Amino acid sequence: MNRAVVEWLPCAEAQQLCARVDPTQHLHSMSLLRRITTAERAAAVYELAWVRAHAVRKFPDGAQLFFTKTALEQASHQRVVDHRAAQFSGATHIADICCGCGGDLLGLATIAPCHAIDLDDGRIALAQANLQVRGLREHVAFECADAQTWELPASVDAVFFDPGRRASSGRIYDHTAYLPPLTSANAWRRPGRRIAIKCAPGIDYSSLPFAHPYAIECVSLDGDLRETVIWLDADHSWRQRATVLDATGTHILDDTQTPAVSACTQPAAYLIEPDAAVIRAGLVQHLAAHIGATMLDTHIAYLTHDVAIDTPFARYWQVLAVLPFSERQLKTVLKAHGGGAITVKKRGSPIDTDALAKRLSQPHGAPLVVVLTRVAGAHTAIVCHGPIHPKESLHGNEAAE
Image 1 (tube, rainbow, N blue to C red):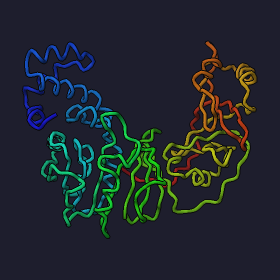
Image 2: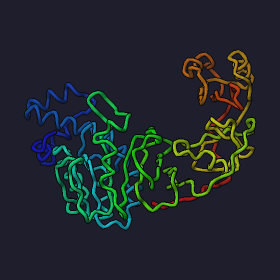
Image 3: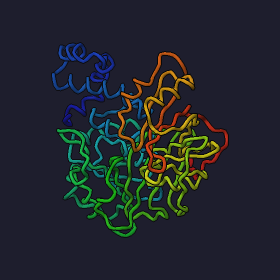
Image 4: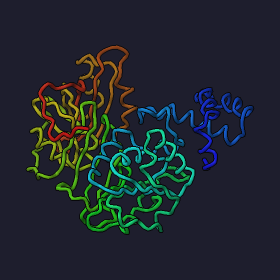
């Protein structure tokens, strides 16, 4: 969207048109809109209606905010925004580089005055509209500029950098192709300046173009891995951290203590599936030490324990049977346990889980889970019930939001 269209969107006329749009009926809605306004405005109103119907999943006031479809897809959930912004506490001047439609500014602007730049003036206009909705517009100075040539003001003591990870051909997985590339951040480094870089969850840590010190934080929300944040030059005692956001709060597991190498054992009473943030942060051994569990295999991110301990960093499954992988034997075991609908999960197995689940499932019986994995190097099937909800509590480090 260009700036002229975006500046029209908040007006009463545009908002009334938006309220008439059914975002599930594209052709009907566009036909209606084009009889009333220009084709360009009609497209913008329809996209806004569609975006607002979906934005409520990420922002509590999403039905009043302004995004494009692509920008909303890349925007962080409000819980993640708030968690990250809180880590800039104490900053006096924050730069938001590649601010897009301002999803992260909605958190950053509550911490300190901000200077936001983006190469797309239309997106800057959307960001300004979003800050106006929250009553934060006066907290941010905007500039349409190229991040690779823009000179960072000397007063900036904290930087948030969210490079583009989408191109016309789709998602960008190679960080050297980010828009702009991650190497841009090296020009902004100086003593005392914190820099947070939002990256895709699956970024290859071994190829990061940064000299130490830097730290890696993996953030999940309700069990779904949302993003990886690279923290440059921040005064952290940790180098890798898993942050789990759920209904009970914010939970943190990090590498400040080096655990003893966890033993590998056969599956015990419970199979433990670490949260995706724990796995991506490389903290499975730390979790094992935290809850007193053992591993099934040195290269597989499953743990096991005789007791189920309530922790936000993992899910527990009650083990019903363990056997070397054999589809014929699996059918016999599942029948003995009254299995009905079967879910197949895998880690370290080449099996097509969807096809196997269809062959194993029965129209009647209890829902069960088959986990295909390696146990001491052997291809193994573990039949489970769950996930279960342990009663004993062990939460570790927590932070209030």
